[in-house]
Image 1 (cartoon, rainbow, N blue to C red):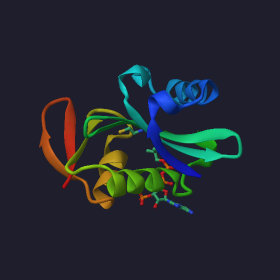
Image 2: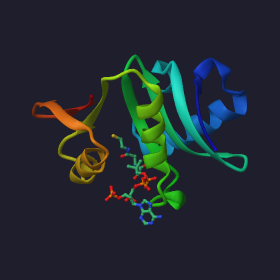
Image 3: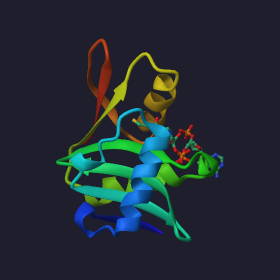
Length: 125
Ligand SMILES: CC(C)(COP(=O)(O)OP(=O)(O)OC[C@H]1O[C@@H](n2cnc3c(N)ncnc32)[C@H](O)[C@@H]1OP(=O)(O)O)[C@@H](O)C(=O)NCCC(=O)NCCS
């Protein structure tokens, strides 16, 4: 099940699971910045997450055991369907995953709005 909701409406257990997913995937945890989230729930577990504030998507991640089954795509598509456009996100440069992520978002109709030495800013219009 996929759900877009206010952070304030998450249960304590859901907040814990979101934080665990973020901590498993990123060095920095920005959970407290988000007003809304899209979560993908399987059984009792949150296995996919993206944080939202303003029109910005951040920290998209899926459980490592559930990758390549379309979960992140469903999360992105939910954002595209429900959020005001344009939607933005950033991709860090100089990481192992930079090229993969650039290709991942480009296939999902995000374009490079600008880039500098450290990151790409992507836009969905
Ligand atoms: C980036 C990330 C969120 C992608 O999650 P995911 O759930 O694997 O994404 P999807 O399954 O929707 O798509 C991944 C690939 O699997 C492919 N795929 C989707 N369903 C599939 C299936 N049933 N069988 C095989 N491949 C499939 C997709 O086509 C896609 O490849 P493509 O980009 O070449 O089209 C995940 O790798 C992750 O959490 N990475 C670590 C955190 C991170 O770096 N986040 C990005 C922040 S900007």
